[in-house]
Image (cartoon, rainbow, N blue to C red):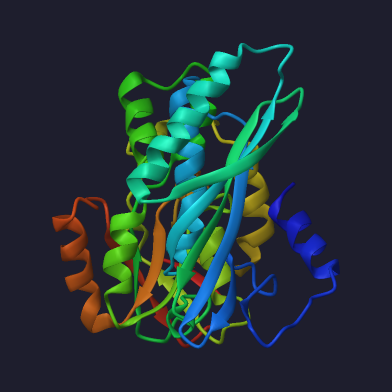
Length: 329
């Protein structure tokens, strides 16, 4: 399902309101947030998908990191998780599933998350992911909308995992590039999120996943009263993927993302097509895109670098006009 199809499907659903519902389906938030008491809310999310790497243990790690990321993007602390498994029992050795689950568990332990159960079904196609529950103070929830004019934009991971996965399938990705992509996808957003939530000037956040960097940036400015300017030269991405893009090695999801959101994008004269494609590349377990007060942006990036979030970079700023649009510079 492409982003436009998903958008239409969500619009067709009757929205359920409740005085304790802080974040629901209205604005394509990363997770749902429900107030339990005046100082406690729960954060709920789930995510699962088919394998994007060959090694089962690594696939489990990537899937877990991806699911946990939604709680981090809301500013929450993930606490418990449940496995979601679709497995072709008659076609695959059960040892493969064991390795997938061990990989997922390794990342849950790293995140300080307790596995409390799960559900499995027999399916012709292997799928794995997590349902995750976290906690947050109701007044500290970070939404994808809320960025203010003058804010700086920070991206915490490089872009390119979708293009690399497509190149792997085509036999065109080198071992070094694949290793970079796997390292990115198996890195939790925990450290970045903890530093973000400790910074008072953060106004909005989302994680960059299937809709690509620009797709999620568009969600942040749509109907929000602000726009963004992106300094594309500052956006971190795997350098090797430029050649792949120019050779036509791009995932189908990239085309869907670009076709859906390109009407919201203004390109500077001479802005290259290959770079537009990279900015729309669908990510798995991507980084956080954070809007933070200008005076705190450089300090936050320095703290991230010191804590091992080495690719974090200031990639643009939030502007009052033109509202609802992304300018690529």
